[in-house]
Every structure is written in structure tokens, then in C-alpha cells.
Length: 355
Image 1 (tube, rainbow, N blue to C red):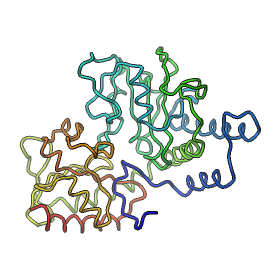
Image 2: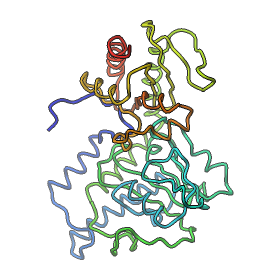
Image 3: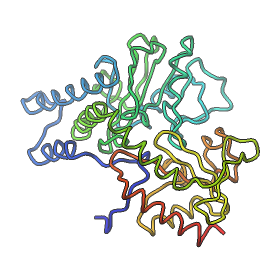
Image 4: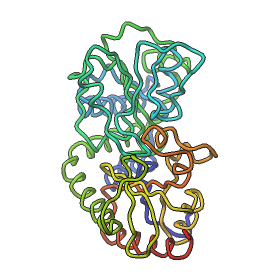
């Protein structure tokens, strides 16, 4: 068990399941459940739970339930598509969608609906470039925007992970447009999921995914309003003095809270990026942790790398700036009280470390 509970301003890495989701999972574990592939009564009942969750996913994403398969997470879903299709990969995509410089670009363009590191919304590219076929990573989009896949007939594939919007780890989905003419070969062979993904169903995680996506989709407007209030509060507390352009980039230079230290600040939707004057992002993460706050140095899946995030570089940061940039990502479970503590800790860090 964790000895303490940090304030989580790393929502884009993982979010806390709601009481509704936890109750559904607890009931499954405590009351017992069967393998959904089994032919006896408990197995059939378990398969009904799988199909009910699939219907909830399809309703939330504006597609048909037979276009959804369950996987272990978005990384597996992304890998399945990439193993079958030659892609033109946007540089801001998740690391599980690799750019292959030695191969020609494919006809399907891979994008993230919302970029994990910066919070940029990129789904409009697929909405308006209707002549192009797309593969869209929806992981950071669910619960933050309305998604209607059938209104975008050029989206052939879409992926997501449950733990990013209030589900539990171990379940993801892959949307396969029924008009897609490509026949996929599975990464994991077996009879489950129409032969596209073998293995015993992770029933608790699948049920949690269905509950979480239903809850998140229902509360998008309310959640976004709360997130916007907290993001705006943090941003306004940081921003002091007149904005001055830095090196003709879209970033701005601020005299942070009157302490006379230069930092670059950007905000986009639920994300604020802070670029310190001298402090490295990895060191900043460790210092914030000592004060009981979780933030990140870019995407959690990139945290083990000493190289800067491609998403930051594409967004205009230099290599050195990217290595000094942290991500503060806000969710609907965060509070204004937590935001006020963040500002106090940030000022301490600037006073004592970024010199």
C-alpha cells in the first residue's frame, strides 16, 4: 500500500476510478465470476457483461458494437494496427506508434486526437481532411470531447485505454471501421473477439471500461467546466507582467509571481506546460514528489528516455527547452485547494532550485 496519497496533477498518465466503477469491480471480485468463453451459465452471464460493456463503448464513440474489440490497452491496439498497416505517423503520436524512417509512408495517417504531452486537440484534422484515411488514438480524448466515429467515415481505426478516464488498468479498445477493406492478422491468436484478439477476457477491467466511458461521456460538459476553472486559476497565478515573445516561438516569457525568474508557460485544454530556466524536468518531478504532488516530464511512457519528447519538439520547443519542460495535467477529480497548494510549492521550487 502507498504510505501517502499525493495530489495527482498527472491525470494524463492515470486517473482515479470513480466510486461507481470501483463498486462494479468489487462486486465482480467478491461475488465471483466466470470465464466469458465458458459454455455454462456463469460463463454466459459473464459474456453478457462483456457485450453490455461493448455496447456502452459503441454508444459513447458513435459506432456499432461489432466494430469494437477489447484489448489489454491502447498500446496493444496501436501495435495491432501498425503490424497490419503501413502508416504515415504524426510526430506527436504516442510512443507505441513508431515512425519508421526506412519505410515509405503509408496511406493511413496516424494521429492523436489529443496530444498527451501538450493537450493539443488534433481530431479536427481527421474531421476536415475527408479524402485521407485515419487511425486515431483517442486515449486522451474520451471524457474531454464528444466523439462520433460514424460522422468521420475516413477513420478506419481508433484506440483507447480505460485507465486514462476512470477505468482500471488492463483494458483497452480498438475500433475497426466495418467498411475497412483490410483484413487484420492478430497479434495474439485465439477465438475470442472474432479471432482478432485471443486470450481470456479481463472481465473486471472490461466492465470498468464500460462503466467509466458511460460516466465520462455523460459528464463531459460539467467535467470540462471544472477542469477549465482549475487550469485558468493556475495559469493566472503563474502569469505576471506583460507577455513577451521568446525567439519568435509561440511561447511567452514571464516574471513568475514576482520572483524575477524566467519560465515559459503554455496551456492547452487540461494541460499546462512549464519550462524552467535552469531546472531539468526530471529533477522537478522528484522535487514536486517530495512536496506530495505528482506531475510529469512529458508522457509517462517517455519518462525512461533521456531524449526529449517529439511532441514538444514539434510544438516549437528546442531540445534544451523540452528537457526542462514539465506537464501539469488536470482532471475532474482535482480541486481548487490542490491547485492552491501547487502554486505554493511551485514558488518554493523557483525560490530554491531554479537559480
